[in-house]
Amino acid sequence: MGRFQKPIILSVILGIGLYFGAMFLGDFQQTGAAIAKLGLVGWIVILSLSLVNYLLRYWRWEWYLTKLSGTRMPRRRHLAYYVSGFALSTTPGKAGETVRSLYLKQHGISYSNTFSTFFVERFQDLLTIVLMSSAAAVLFEGYSYLIIISAGVVFASLPVLHSRLVLSKLDRMSSALPTKFGAALGHLIELLNTSAVLLKNKELMGGILLGITAWMAEGIGFWYLLERLGQDVDLLAAVSIYGVAVLIGAISFLPGGLGSTEAVMGLLLISVGVPEPVAIAATLICRIATLWFAVFIGLIVAGIMAARGIVPVAASEVVEQG
Image (cartoon, rainbow, N blue to C red; front, side, top):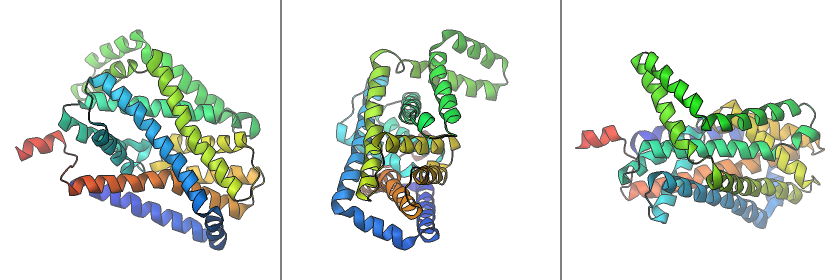
């Protein structure tokens, strides 16, 4: 995997260190008891719901990328490329997942198309998470302004992304800037122009429906986890807690939302009456079953592809090899 091995290994080591540290700083025995109480059936259910999330998001990704590029790849190979990006989910804004573009470039799919698809995917995920967490504006005091402002920014930016007036002004601005900054702004304009195709009509509505279904699967998994741990938390409250925690993790721009997501999830659970040791245990299990399960699958798939000689190769490396 070459130069991508180091960030992958470091992110995994960091994550393992943080999670074991959290277990020992909290209540190790209570966490262990919670894991045992969840049982094999419980793990199968919540991991299966996480898989539903990943597969629905892949379906949306494949639909969008095929729409932009006009290229339909073999599904198993494309799914492997998509999933391998999960190995770098612990990068800020999940930007490391764009490693998919290096695989796809070798099939003639441009960076412009993959980056635009990635941008729309992240935008729609943010929109979905805001919708999921909207009930928290009423249920939890102190979070209403965050939810309202986040929703306002996300929904207000949608017409801006379609605005020809905004794009034309940006285009004129890029011509007046120094070459380096003008070129960077030009790339942004190209990304926005390409992305606009996916942010209207059936592509927009279909993507939102797939996103809501995907993220609701993990939200329901979180509620089911609490039920298995003997906590009577309303489904709407559980989904909202999960949504707010993921939202704050996303806007914190910390790698994988590490620390911020866990802190908010634990505090909100405690606020609805979940005992602190159980809240810590539930938070850790939830993150293992969602974020770290994805990272683990990504590492396995990327490793299998590397063993078969299928590696992400940058355009510059192709030139050097030639």
